[in-house]
Length: 266
Image 1 (spheres, helix red, strand yellow):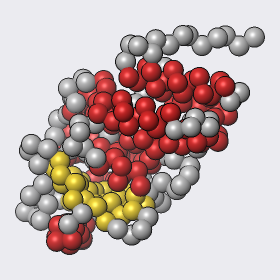
Image 2 (image 1 turned 90 degrees about the horizontal axis):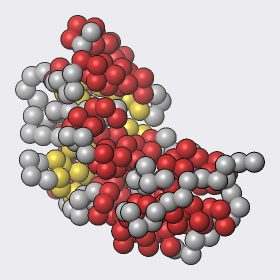
Image 3 (image 1 turned 30 degrees about the horizontal axis):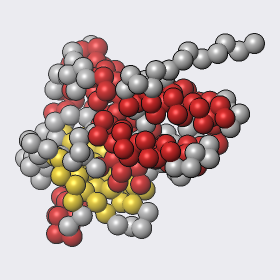
């Protein structure tokens, strides 16, 4: 006989309350975690982690699970009312656009792009804040989703990213090897050789959503800025194409990453 899952304490945190309601709806629907995951295009493992308050879900997860489990909007209301501020700072609305994108174009000057970070690398950058680490890793689900298709991701990294020590040799080896491993038909990684280029002003991401509308996220020292202003988008699009035209092709970029692992982090 299957063992009854451990009870949850909904009063312990907003995430625990969300997890408890998710489990209640799932069990009321007579579905296992894997069965619910199949219907919602998420893994049963992720659903279980959300129920145990171990993973921070994105809004799209709440919306999809509410629909599959006939929740009447309760999960969406809980996410909007309780989890939204916990997942990201109030000004950080980028994940909404990121999850709706069919194409993501990213340039990173200093560190690996968030959707391609390993857990250990992200934990170092986020100074061990586990809630923020879970939120960043949850964002990466967009690259693994089954429906709708995950976005195409074109990521360009300044070469200095490969040499900047984030967490020590072991963390850097794992991170750079991960960059090599994730490249696929839908994900490209290119390295921009060190030197003067149009990306020295800072990192940014362009998201093209379903209606072919572009939205951009630009990092600053104080905070990130999400913009849909036509002038900003035209400048950033031109800048990205200029940067990518000077970057190494994907196969040469992967060779450079692999050599850097051996020369710098082994």
